[in-house]
Amino acid sequence: MEYIIGILLLISFVGFRWYGGSDPVTLDKIRQIPGMRSIVSAVYDVKPGEVWPEESIKHLVDECREHGLIFDVVESIPVAEECGVVMALHPDDPPYPIFGLPRVITCEENLDRYLSIVDSPANSLCLCTGSLGSSPKNDIPAMVRKYSSMNRIGFMHIRNVKILPDTSFEESGHLTQNGSLDMNAIVKALVETGFDGYFRPDHGRMIWGETGKPGYGLYDRALGTAYINGLIEANGGVIE
Image (tube, rainbow, N blue to C red; front, side, top):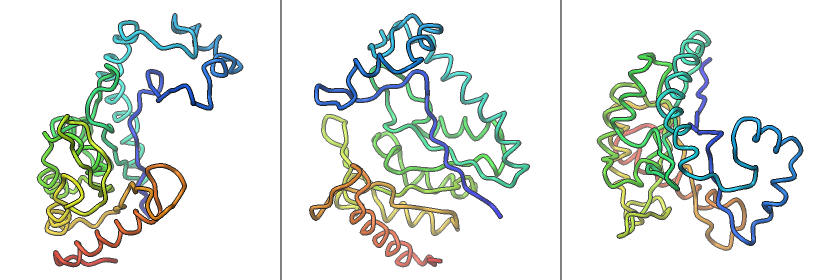
């Protein structure tokens, strides 16, 4: 039996989260987390719950970007292959720097480099069309066709995004007309290359008065699934 394990590449010790005056977790609470002050202060000269100056963490980010990914892949993939596990790497979302923090997996060049680190069927991609598609530089249908032909896509996240004039983006409905991605071309590439892996509609808007976890609306994801199934059938694919 084979399992697909999705991996979200995170720089765990140099991260960020949105913060505002209405945030339920105040900076005072963060500063009072037991053990946080001693743990953080023992390694970094920055108090917990404070904004880290960009210059003080730049070398950490650079080191992680250059060495962290390689270390993880070299250490984990041989074990995964031995156990019959397929590891699927999720790209950075969004695919461009946030608050000066660089990203690691954002484009075809990065994906090629990642796959070349350990050339193994156990080393595959979780190809997220929304994450990579947030950059107009990425030709998503071509990338899907390329990596599916190589049998290096373990998991597909199929969703649409709308790129705005200022190059920012918003999550849209799954239909091609709702966003900036050609969803039919994406699914057609999967069908024509014989993709038989897992897929999901990934994200969903809150529609029809639904309340729940932002970005994961149940109704919109159900509509997305039905739409993707329709595209598969229209392109001659078989839904199992």
